[in-house]
Length: 337
Image (cartoon, rainbow, N blue to C red):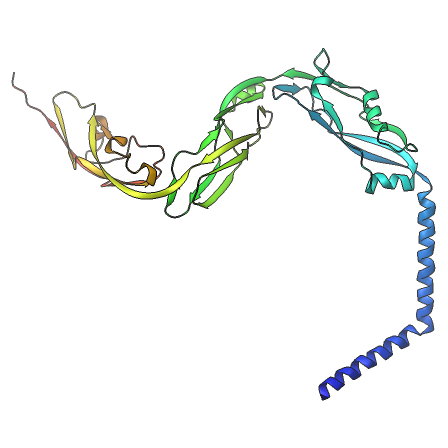
């Protein structure tokens, strides 16, 4: 209770001090001063809004239906800057309220017989005047017209390559190669640029801990100086639950010269790999092959050589060979004439 009473006394004391401050003559004079200052500012704003001013407004230009194989002699303007004059209160509408829509240029309609993209001054002015207030004066606009020479680009069909990382959840894996549709696209540019392009990559994507198949629509990475017939592709990633399977694969030595015998120890190795559940039964020994060239044996005088899979299904991403190295003996056969 004593503590509560103390707090109440402090609050009452503060209220008394605030009332005393507000009743001081000096504070009243300050309030009156700021009141007249605000009134003066208001009258000045009202008077200013009735005066005429000139401002600049930037209007974007949008180009429609431009074929991918069209090249411009110089980049067409992206904006048109207009200069308008009107009273301040009207011009304020263009800044915070009314907006002027972009100028849309239809490529097919604007292209003349000389292959020039041509939008006249009269066409631009007519578009602008439709959207200005009747009191607004259009003084000038830059550029006053659009006139750009066009030409045909050269074409090259190149493959589309997936660019990213895919990490399935534990116990899951890629059931097949990542598929892209379409697998290749037409690229348009000058011959020099096309000669330097061997592929088009998707934008980088990082996909982690997935347990089911997905399809994503990915944008293509732009290439400076080139345009594509399309800017997006569909990427399908087949994910499935995996299990382990072990197969015994024989080792084959090729290109053995006449009257030579190669003995390999062991003659076969175990291939341990992760397999999609749906493909477990169909994965056979014939899906893999291990081959060693005779000339490679000659370079390993130690009598042992590392081995690797030569053929395997594309969807097999990880595997181990047990053992991963074999020993060999080269013998010459003895024949009696």
